[in-house]
Length: 131
Image (cartoon, rainbow, N blue to C red; front, side, top):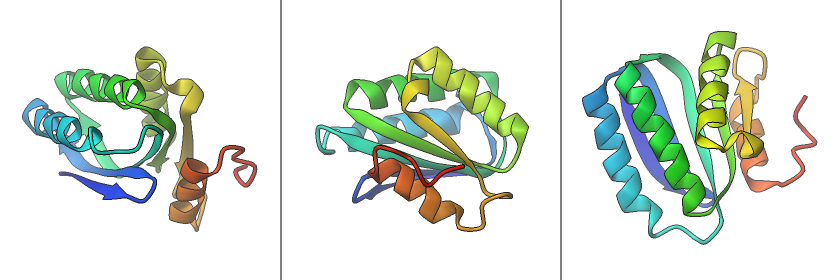
């Protein structure tokens, strides 16, 4: 399952369960439509704490989406995770897509106010409130 919503800072994406190629392709097409109406600089909040996994093809599509985010002006990205395995997957994708410099990770199992922490990372440049 996935969802995409516009937020005051840019886009909020949610991934849950197992994401296969077809669903990830729908996500990418939706991102392409939404991204053109965003400001020149925007942030992305990605809630992946209930994600079980991606197919290999879905990972490739997500990497393409991350490249698109950056090309259209993404200046901050946060991924809400629940495990070291999830963090490793998103760090690898960020490295491959070239966005690792702009991405932060918040572990929802360790951060009670994970949503606020994530939004603050996206809207503030220094990230000083994060551990």
